[in-house]
Amino acid sequence: MSWRRSQPSPLGAMGRKRLITDSFQVVKRQHRDPDTKEGSLQPEAVLVPAESPTDSSLHSAQLEMLKQFDLSWEYGPCTGITRLQRWERAESLGLSPPLMVRETLLEHVGDPSFMHCLWHDYPL
Amino acid sequence: MFSEQAARTAQGLLAPPSAEASTFARVPVSTYVNCSQHFRLGERSFNRQYAHIYATRLIQMRPLLLERARQKWGSGIAVRKLCELQTAEKCCIVGTLFKSMQLQPSILREISEEHNLLPQPPRTKYIHQSDELILEDELQRIKLEGAIDIQKLVTGTILALYGSEREDGRFVVEDHCFADLPRQLPRRGPSTDRFVLLVSGLGLGGGSGESFLGMQLLVDVVTGQLGAEGEQSCAAQISRVILAGNLLSQNTQNKDTINKAKYLTKKTQAASVEAVKMLDEILLQLSTSVPVDVMPGEFDPTNYTLPQQPLHHCMFPLAGAYSTLQLVTNPYQADIDGVRFLGTSGQNVSDIFKYSSMEDYLEILEWTLRVGHLSPTAPDTLGCYPFYKTDPFIFTDCPHVYFCGNAPSFRSKELTGVDGQQVLLVTIPDFSATQTACLINLRNLTCQPISFSGFSADEDEGEMEISH
Image 1 (cartoon, chains in turn purple, yellow):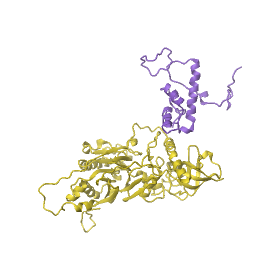
Image 2 (cartoon, chains in turn brown, blue):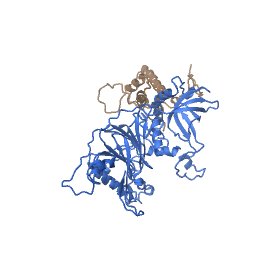
Image 3 (cartoon, chains in turn yellow, purple):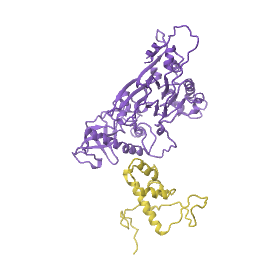
Image 4 (cartoon, rainbow over the protein chains, first blue to last red):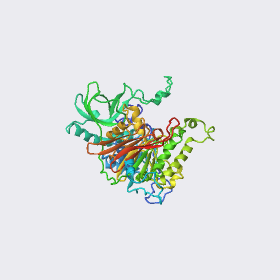
């Protein structure tokens, strides 16, 4: 059975709302080098080791959690600041943001799809 | 008082010169702590919108307001968010006020060519009978009616309202309350008379030389070169001088040279260059003798948005050599000899004056303290840096002396708070117009004006007066 994607409908083929990432794929600027080891001197920018198929679902689940963090209104506006800055602001104002978010952000420091908010690529 | 003490001690000027010249040592600085770190900006990024500062302002002030609301209307009142409101239910809501004003200058209206409108002439007040108040919280907004003074309040105030929602969707207000004065640390003032001199609006570079004599008299009084030994010993008790803004005159901001093309203005010097040189010489005379704190004001060469950063020390090559010269931010907060001072150069108060029916600068100053925020109209009508983490203009501690510069006249008042706070409110007059400065006695927190006047071509009597 094949999935029909020719007619775009609001609910889409998988029964969920269409996301902008359906039309414009998220481009991650990373060097996928499976030979990278931690601690070795590399002259280039941050090298992220390649992901195995099981990791990519974890990756997307984490991104989904961060997106929900962006969209929750209790922690204030999300545009114009990084997610870590927003988390720290929420923490200092006593709003008790979820710790999972901070751990995920600290694991992926330097990865723009994690650090910046959902609307980062759009102008002010 | 200054002159009573002078009258009691020592000899007047009509005495034979003494064998030795008497010297008076100035009172030493016992404690001074500059508490304005949260007004300093490090790396500045303007890639943010102002939604952050309003959001943090509401989140930070909401618990204070709920506490005041429960104290005022009983602890059993229902506190609702705007999305939870039900018709005709008496409840308390907390949010940010927005006043939609018909006469508020709007850049969109100015550039709208369809209407062929000329730009609006500047007015003293922009209030109008048709202004409306709207309360906003994190998610919704609602129009307000009822027992609330629309003309008096301004945009950006955080307040708590008690009332109910009507069928047509407006909130009928029965009562309102503000955050009121925050807690105050105990005052550990000096046990002997010690004075701080507050001056504002020196207005150098203004073109008219009338205020020069007054300024020189002021400097001479402070440095002890004026009067008999009585006055000099009193002047030795001045432990600090604070210059609260507008050191340069408005005339130095010459719009013509700013808007002209660069090749036409290459040889002309900005008017502020001469004025800053004069300021440097005055500060040199003051700094050799007394610690001076210099706050920038509306017309001074620093950034326009609040909080204004200190003037750069390279502009003061002569006075900058002395460690007594301190260049500080606007607003400025410091602990001087155990007394907490907090003040601005007056931009916050004059901005509220434009958009509110309140006429008196002292009344507006007291109102900002009661509302719990230094300048609620920032960033709506007053330029402000887009903070995102905290709003530094919220009062965290109640000051002992709260001042604002560049007011039309000298006024002062002692305010007592609900929890026993004692605050001295002072509006410092514009020196270039009124030739008046303020002396604050740190021992008992009293304030008195000191004015200088010189010869004027119109007057018949040519008397130099230093009156108290």
